[in-house]
Image: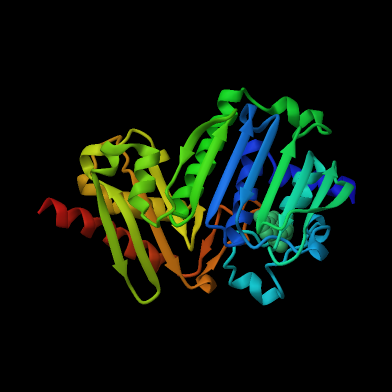
Length: 322
Ligand code: ADP
Ligand code: MG
């Protein structure tokens, strides 16, 4: 019902950046190759995400806004091998309960659908063009939850969170072309050609991209890849450590520690490495259903993974400094 949707919204939708995160995850789950984001006033006025993905068939459009309605988990066993970014079926229900949302979508093989949802209530439904893909516009976020609205910070701060969210998405999906506009001006772009180093360059600049070492180590259970900064381009905070597990950007103190330990002999005191570490593994070996934001995970063989990451980082640096 309305109230439980609003309560759930508090967990999933904290600020404009969280809306964008959820919408981008949905676009990626729908196999999009190209995703365009248009923002007005750091998303406080309007957030639009357009993709060229699978689209939603006319029969499923309303369902997408029901709580716990997901097309991605068929049975309880799927929960133990999650391959999509979304799986809780909460995002659209939550976002639409605290905003004025318009969905335009088409699977490309029949007429598309336009659905207008205000504060969780369906206000209108219409036919729409046939172009394959989905466009979701979220306007007046938190218009009906004044407490949440008050908690939002300045345009500058909100835009900072948004940039961080989009950067993470782009780093974890170098094969997807991202374009982001703020108040009509393009603020971010990636080519979508699968080249991670080019995404790193878009985000961190040329100097850093030119000073990254390639990581590559495949073991029985884990494929580890990515880039790690040479010791001379370390930073004074940890914000430049990116962990990506099966295409999902995650936080994990143990893996961070493994990176530091691997880096240890090369790291001056108070400095942190710049790293983009991708770990691919059997989804059975990682539990992503730990927290609603889906950024925390649990590894079933954490010690083994810890040692492999530590050694991989050490070897990558060691080879270069011989
Ligand atoms: P979840 O992603 O956990 O399944 P959401 O509330 O985020 O839940 O989305 C609900 C459903 O709406 C998805 O399962 C998917 O079927 C559909 N959907 C949402 N966004 C898109 C999109 N951009 N393209 C295609 N389908 C989408
Ligand atoms: Mg989702």
